[in-house]
Length: 346
Ligand code: ADP
Ligand code: MG
Image (tube, rainbow, N blue to C red; front, side):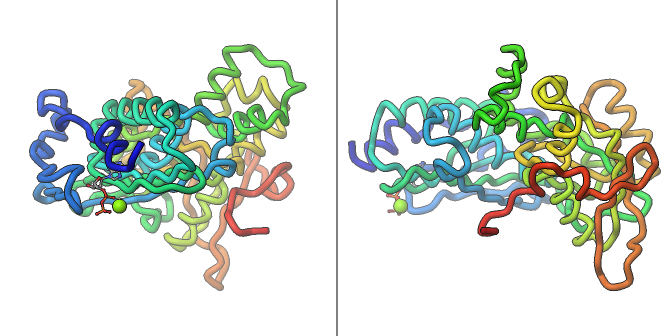
């Protein structure tokens, strides 16, 4: 099968999501795709008074997913991880492009991959508007585009002293899932339901788009927890020139994760496991009641885990400190596996 046949058969989507199916906030997006797949470039029209927010993620076979992962699993993982960055900015997902590199044009692989990708994209009303198809080792690159009301994007450099720190969902599931997938926890007997839950956290991460849209009026700073809570909050501390204090006894850890590993390991996973695709955000004291109301009426699932404080070092050395039931603890003593994922470290 040739490149253009693949594009036409599997990636050229018929039509834009109808205006009726768009939430009210998205109605400005009607007719925003002037030209989709088929020309040298897509042409997009950004609604008035909005900023365009763009992010790219690459998933390499054997590195970001096991070589034997199913095409549908790869599609939902690629889409979920990439959209998580838009969630972290408080953006509405709109369009995406796909860079697809495959060793061969195998319809048995491409068909379920495109079906899963286009189906999850439809769930988020995010339209595939272009891409590139090449031959080589299996690698999937997605570039997502979202919009946010001008000046309202949630940024890493906007944490302020006194803010409360929150995180959506559970922490540690990504690392627990990976331990299962890699058979590192094979001896730990857990129920099928827990296994299924953890597997879906890895292969079908749920980007916190709606939660982020719900808090966008009450927060100015957010980051997605893809490299591990401590590593990602460190980025916030550095960019915002503050210190951050975390109450490790408050970290939300799922029952499935607790069933799989002992409490010290689950805490270590929660602090530095990565692959969680949750959003950490900060809330100034005056908006605390608003966010607590959203949590109490179950509009968002989030937990308060700490505070933003004045930097205690004089030499631009901003950091994240841990407390356990009010007692200072060294993060190093809590991390019993690794410290947040970074490429090219060895
Ligand atoms: P060019 O030669 O200008 O790079 P291509 O031949 O690569 O263009 O692509 C032709 C059209 O198909 C373009 O609109 C491009 O965006 C789209 N396209 C190519 N590959 C993909 C893909 N994997 N998914 C979606 N659209 C694609
Ligand atoms: Mg091309």
